[in-house]
Image (cartoon, rainbow, N blue to C red; front, side, top):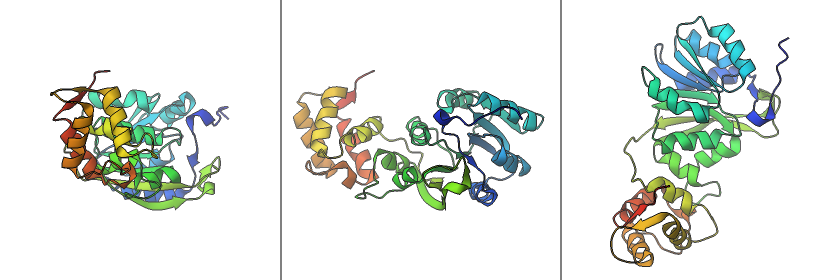
Length: 279
């Protein structure tokens, strides 16, 4: 009737399974009056579910046509506000100007930005007490992966630095419209630490996973030479050797073998001698 269409570049797939939507909202476990962010509200199926429970909701939606529908459906509700545009570009401004900091986040995240958005929130240290999100199953497995597994990656370490995660539901293609060619999964994040890691932690994690086949020593040597400045006398080789030894990391190991706390320890040791160059 409105002439709206699904746009592939925005990764739009509506969650049309009502039981799955209800379970996702219930798993968020936000009480009436709680401040919640919903990412990718679409045409408002879960938006309505949240508002019916008395949630104070801030919805993020990129599609102008869908935004118009959301305003028509929920604009008169005092608990509803809408942020138009790409959430990657709008969330920080929304966070700075919010009267109260939301403690919860929910979203059927577009496949195209799910890992990028979650990594962005964690690296900027915008933590939520609880998050419940639907993502591509491959991304869910990476988020919840254990050290040594094939799915273990930089996003596994970043997420585990702040959250305990659990995949609580797998969603087949027909749960969505249009039907995607991959399975999805719903993941619950419980905040377990707001203790900020050393500033080098985030770039170090990404650098050590940059080339998975290379050893930690090889990736670390490249990271130090390309991104860091020496604060104390010495060479990058000496600094690297000392930091690895004090962290209990063998130079020949690969990043996929290290548990998240070791990355934090290694970053702290390196910061005694180097600092990241200003970009």
